[in-house]
Amino acid sequence: MNILVVDDEEVLQDVLTALIRQEGHHPICCASGQEALTVLAQEEIDLVLLDLMLPDMNGKEVMRRIRLSEPDQVVVIITAYSSIEGAIEAMREGAFHYLPKPFKNEEVRLTIRQGLERRRLTAENRDLKEQLRERQGFDRIIGKSRSIRQVFDLIRRAAPSKSNILIRGESGTGKELVAKSIHGNSKRTDGPFVTVNSGSMPSELLESTLFGHVKGAFTGAVSHKKGLFEVADGGTIFFDEIGNIPPDTQSKLLRVIQEKEFMRLGGLETLRADVRLVAATNADLEARVADGEFREDLYYRLNVITIQLPPLSRRVEDIPLISQHFLRTYSTENEKQPRRLTSEAMDLLMAYHWPGNVRELENVVERAVVLSTGAEIGVDLLPGNIRRPDTTLPPPETLPTRGVSFKEAVSAYERQLIVKALQACGGVQKRAAERLKVKPTTLHEMMKRLRVTVESRAS
Ligand SMILES: Nc1ncnc2c1ncn2[C@@H]1O[C@H](COP(=O)(O)OP(=O)(O)OP(=O)(O)O)[C@@H](O)[C@H]1O
Ligand SMILES: [Mg+2]
Image 1 (cartoon, protein in one colour):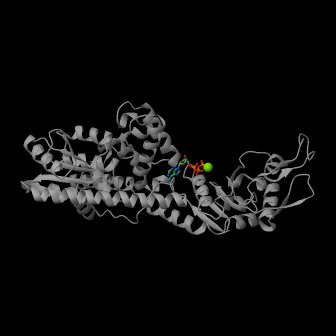
Image 2 (cartoon, helix red, strand yellow):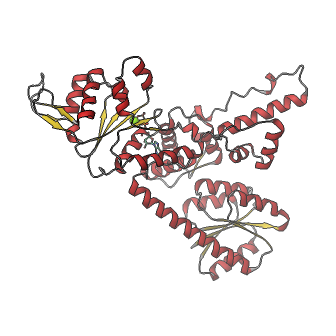
Image 3 (cartoon, protein in one colour):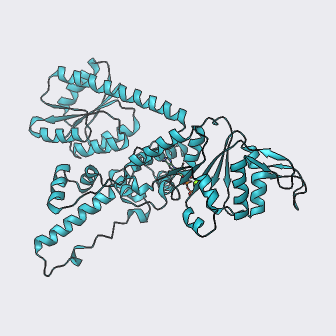
């Protein structure tokens, strides 16, 4: 196993190196935080022994960065007795254990063994989960927020049924991905998955695409042609943006759903349709029904089970995971060494409101990976609209100066800072505290004093 020792004291490096070798592992030493992060990006490291006092960076900052890029990394903190508080805080932020200096050799050995055992268990656990997800076809939907887990749960329960499913969500939230996952989790998984982009096709063309046509059915129909309902036989047919389907076609679609039958254009033969229907929309279907643009009966037929995908800004905690996923994908695709986001860059990604949702995040990460020259992706590689500081917070000079006491004005400003941070972090106080660079307990006290409350977690 590779064990990284991050400490600038040579004596200590020697002691730890010897102990690691005695345990049968391979030590790698670094004397600074920056060096450690570089090694971590390039080598497969199984355990990190990290001193909190480093010449170039605070050890806690190093740990934070490690955990951002490798959430499963096992980090053991080394610290002097006098600064044990720092170690405890680091534990709260996810360090595995701490070793107060001076330590006994036996203590170090034991901690290393336990740390590596933890490493083995998490890896095993992750492998099992991956296998499970692969089997269920969830492998590509990334996320751990409560709202996305509810989506997983709904897919798991609804997919094996025969019911039609309507997927709703803003552009780029993953509707197509979910449709494929439904197919992958259904009993039809070995059958075809066929997508209908009903977008802007004129209704005749759309109908011949869906139902097929016989030779001579219309000008240009020079031969028989199978429609997508035939192609999808035994599988799933996915109607992307169902709200755009013209009224004539809506009636025919309704018939297929109700009777499980259809005819080719110009044909006389009635064909059976054994297909599962999944539809997606970003439109306000209810409004279209009210306006008479969308058939109400079709609406009810489609809407047996609804899966609502939350916008990315409502599941901020998924942003690091999804970013890492795309970092890996695009580093590999572009044949580059693995890339990492600096914590400043990650903070900006988490604060941005993502109107284009996951697709926009994917584009931003792809662009940054392509433009990057080193292992780290910093703020400079993010597009201007994300990099621009939030200007919604009034600059101090616009705050009232007359009729308000100094204390009140300061409180008002503090309050705004806290509310902004909480909003950016989806109401997660721990992250908001990190953003503001205060301890969670301090934030909690300030919130109490300033009467800031978090009504409900956004996810
Ligand atoms: N949770 C997720 N994890 C990983 N990738 C995702 C996730 N959600 C979406 N994506 C990716 O984001 C991109 C957009 O997703 P998708 O095409 O499914 O969105 P959509 O809702 O169909 O968008 P539109 O309404 O614009 O058609 C795809 O590349 C998809 O793989
Ligand atoms: Mg789509």
